[in-house]
Image (cartoon, rainbow, N blue to C red; front, side, top):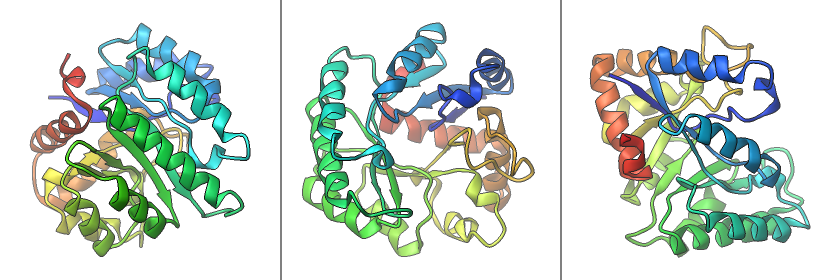
Length: 260
């Protein structure tokens, strides 16, 4: 039995002093597959170095995070277009719209999101969607560009039941559940209780959003176990059963590279 962390930023500076230790600790704990979503082009080199060192465990994605979108986002998109041709990447992401802190670049965020979805379709890759305070804006774009070939994950889900149902209605998208499910009054536990396991993948979003009982500390992929156990308690299933469901779901989205 093993688990798949479908969203972990092992390449950021928070892991510069002990990255190998953190990766190996996760693998030894049973988290044997880890997807590394992109943020911006400055991380491409380290993402690829990690995936080359751990070719059966760590899989890079490439994309421009919505919070990194500004007036010069086209330069980043051009870098992504050139880099994606290498065939190294398991997905386009993380991409999307984030209006939590600031909506100054809302139009640029929408354009960057659309362009990266089109790029993903061109290369037959799934997308990893970041959405915060922007479900209606994201749904509008997915409604416009969705087809039978487009698939992906709505990562770090913080929406409501209706928004979860909307995602499920797209057929080829999964809902990413992370440490937020362990937070008191988050409400995500109630929504997950209502969702069939066929629609869920699990993630840490490390080094962010540490689950209880690690909240307030740096998150890491090993902490996926706390998230998994919370879902097992809600669903009254074993960890092995959850692993079977969520690994199958991850392969449906990200492909058979995860089976290597």
